[in-house]
Image 1: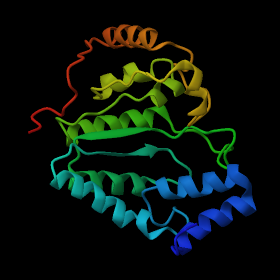
Image 2 (image 1 turned 90 degrees about the vertical axis):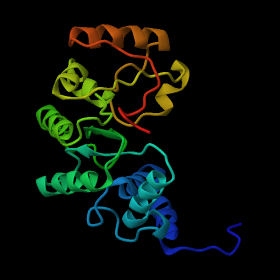
Image 3 (image 1 turned 90 degrees about the horizontal axis):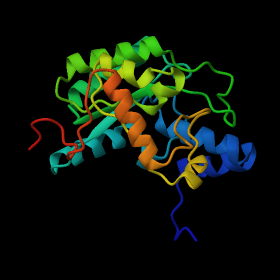
Image 4 (image 1 turned 60 degrees about the vertical axis):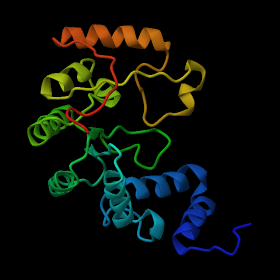
Length: 219
């Protein structure tokens, strides 16, 4: 069924699923592939998903004219200050059009459920630093910020964010996309979510613009 293709990294993912079960195996494979640090990712990494290859894909997309986004989680397990600095330096090299960051939030069905979630203050500080480093970048006040604090998205806007993201998925399927526990806006219809966001943005002293969301001065 694989057409003769066998890769050691892919085999590791399959074995993780067999030995750890689909919940723990899937978490081990998924989180390992997402972390932008070769030392905190899983040891045997599929070559096609290596850190270098993922970075190369971002640069290639920029070269052929796409607007490119990148980012990182704040407060993820085992993350150190040095890791955040490394992420910032990579973003300075890449010069993306959009940068998405948000706090790590635990999920009850993963091996990291006992770890604390990321801190609001540190996340807001990183948003502010990114705004200083990238004056024109698209920088979201993420739903995750609103999940760890009732006014998290408003605080994100005040710290330098300039994008909000309404949840437009049909209500009946939102629970199937459960990235973390207690995610906000999972029970609102799309129109309700937009109205709520408009009021929240206004309370922070801003106004929602619904034009095409290009980065400022993108050509």
